[in-house]
Length: 195
Image (cartoon, rainbow, N blue to C red; front, side):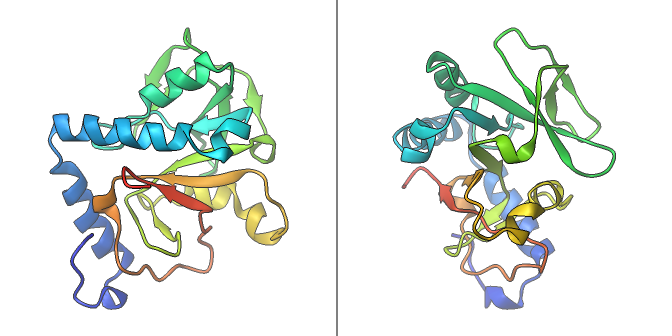
């Protein structure tokens, strides 16, 4: 957990910077071992076993390695969709199969070229990348607001249970408290190597 000088006084930018540094300090072997534990925890969850249409991010260098999870989902015949950033600052989700070609966008994110498009509200499960999170399932991302904008309909329809937004992170990214912005979408849960 990130040490706090009263983390309620820290801005989201401060927390983001501290957690990005902690995440980057994990050595490759440790990152791989922790990612395997996180993958196992996700696979063992009810929300994963029940989901048919799953959005999974393609990992950046210091993020949880989602490739083992993607491969497992393909083996289980689940439909995998990867997020693609749009000019309107929303995400679209395109089907991602073993044969999909990937391109790297201007932010360094890998995205599939083409693939069937699915509306965000038809996904069963969205595995969300994050930089920091707290015990209330508040999340700090990279600062672009893509997930919050794309899934704002969940805030407007509080009874809507689909899709389930679940964060994926290392335990070192947990902070004591995040003060959410009014537009932030709270996650259903966050899976780490300890959950």
